[in-house]
Image (cartoon, rainbow, N blue to C red):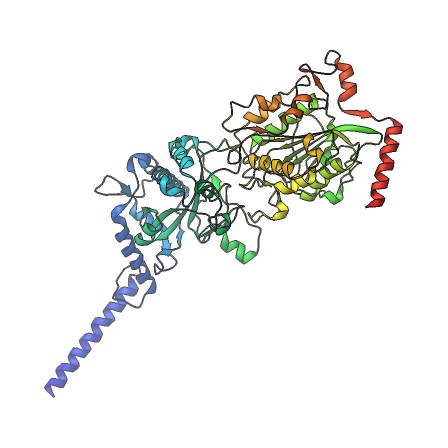
Length: 612
């Protein structure tokens, strides 16, 4: 009986101790006690603090570079480490919470920003680490996943104050997904933040860009991904293209294959949770941050309007129609080719792709080239402008209308109509200045806003050559000031070698660079814009030795023998150069056709239509 009584007292004591533990844990929910199973939140918080303490041993924030940025946050104490670095441990553990476990080595950390200054500090710290990661890139290893070794070495020598920095601001309950026009990215979804660096801001898109992911991850996962730890449980990794080194490109050299793996366009970064739940159009959340942590300024972008006018008469220009986005089916187009006359025509193509890649230098290029066309006698009614998503561009004078470059069928129909109509055009000038991919395709406009280039949203090289093949114009002058314009040159030369069409001999292509060359700034177009009525077309090529790229020209002899408006060159000067008014009447603008010549041409066209 004594033993039973003693055991009963012990049992009552054990019950009393457990009840006290439960009451104390309920009264202190913030306490991290792994022995308690009554508060799930306490257990999760303890796991987060444990992982943070493990990863906090090698914090990589340079206190000298952003001590000034952090000093404004007096309410956020710092913890100094033995290696002279500094990291705000309280800031991290307070403002981030774990959403998924570390079982896969990676987790989603969602930001819980206290105030605006904290977000700015996060961005400054991130920019510092991105700079350090750029400087630590192994260029010998780089060609295996993002570019060739030579371009990587060039990149490593560029001062960061000449680069642009883009970032998605941390948001509560937000995870980001990434898409690019060229194809897929590895691990493109569920990221805490995304950063983009443009090391060549004066080059035309597409050109090499660096894209970085910021994820919550363990140290082994971060090391396996060749990442950089930027804080407790945070890893910075470089994004890579997916499927760029496939068997279909095995014929390429290692350097060319490496260039196919480049990311050449600013990606579309969007909130995947909002878009999946609401089915909304993907909204670009990437922002350019000027002069942050030693990076350079942001570009002046051109914002396009999406207003649509249901009815707009464009036979005569009106201010009501000038700056609106129009559907081509609602536009009343006048006849393209004139009756009893042959004229000089010009087409300018600039897609732009989206508002982020639209910068003011593109509009300046178009304006200067348009001015040159007018100086060489081209009538403004015969210059068709295809520009961005709505066709709205200021050219220095009122003109009839501009059309959106988003309508690919309208562009192709316009060019083929001029080329397939006999005696329609004497000179046809085509100016191409827009973002291009490594295949040489001109990106027009992201109509559906999904960030991925589809067949209807880009003008392929072969499609363009098909449109000008057998052109009836006496002269076809193509000016391609865009990246990878050498691809168009190579394709044209292959067409010429594989066919007996004599019409190709009248096609002069002046390209700003070679196959892998970028188009830089306004250098090339500025030179072309100086072309005067007294100079032959070859002048546009001969003065391009100052550029970063290797310009090229096809059928140079034809370019040397004629002016832009088709006047023959004799002894270095066009015919009637001593009589400008007569030269203007004889060659510039439009010339009336004799009625017998027009009737003969009309009858031949009727006969050919009957035979077909």
